Image (cartoon, rainbow, N blue to C red; front, side, top):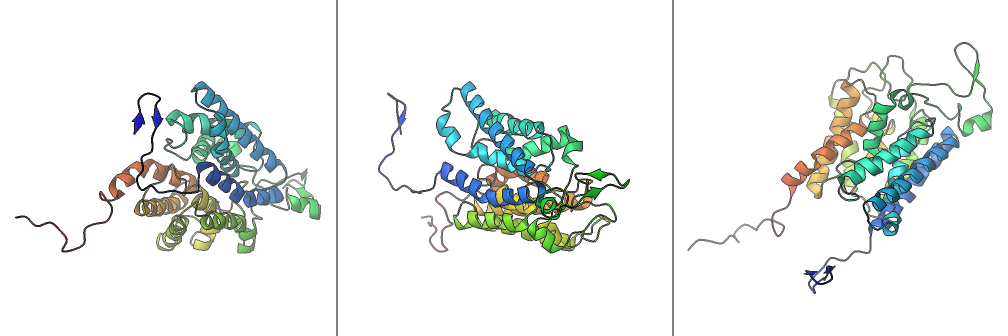
Length: 348
C-alpha cells in the first residue's frame, strides 16, 4: 500500500517470504567465484590480462556513476550492489588476452550505457550486458577480437619458467605466435588434449580456458544457491547430446567429440555465469530448462553450420530475446498447482 502523503511504501502484516540474500551479496559472491578463472588467465597469458580486467571494471563503474547522475538516481547504493563490476569482469573474460586498452573501455561503456541503462537499468535490460557488448565488439573490431591467441609457453608464466624463445616461419624472434582457437574449423587445426583443456594451457579468451577454475567458481555459486544447478547441467547435457546426433561439416578431429565441445571455448563460462543471469533468463523452473536447452541447441548449430567458430555468445543472446515469450507460456496457474482430481466444484 502506498502512503499518498509521503510516497512511502507501507508493508502490511501478512505472511511474507523473508530471505537473507540481497543483490549486493549475490553480485559480490559472483565476483568471488570468478577470481579463479582470472588467476588462471593471468598465469597462462601474462599480467596484461589483469590490466584488461581492471580497465573493463573501472570503466563499467565510472559509466554507471555517470549514467545514474544523468538520470538523477542514487549513486552510492547502486554502485555498492556490484552489478557493474560483474559486467566488467565477464566482458574482460570474453576478450582475447592481447587486446588494445581501448577495446575493454569501449566495450564496458557500451555494456553499461546502452545495453543496461538504455532499457531502464538493473532488472530491466533484455540482454546480458557483457555478452551483448562482446557481440558489439566482434562487429566493431573483428580483426582484434579474432587474433592474438596465445598459450602458456608463448606468453604467460610458462615463458618465465622455461625461457623459451619463439620464432615465426621466417625464423624471426617474436614475443608470441598467433594460433587458431581450439574450436577452429579448418582442416589440420590444432587439437588439444584434455589435460590442457582442463588446466587451461590453450589459446582462448582471458577467462574461458581453464575448465577447473570455471568449475570451481560454478560449484561455489551452486553451493551458495545463487544459481540453479539444473541450468548449467541442462545446457551442457544438451550440447553433449546434440554433438552426438547432428552431422558436422567441420573438417577437424574434435568435431564429433562432445567432451571437447564442453571443455573448449566459452561453454563453461556461459553455462555457469551467463545463462544463469537472474535478469535476462526466465522466472520459472520449466522456463529455465527450456532456456538452457535452447541455448545448448543453438550453440551446437552455430559451431557446426556457421562460419563462426564459437556459438555460446549468440546462443545466449538469442535465448535472452526469447525470454519474455518463454515466461508467457510457462507462467504457473493462479494460486499455484492444479486442483487434485475429485475436488472440482460441481454444478447444481
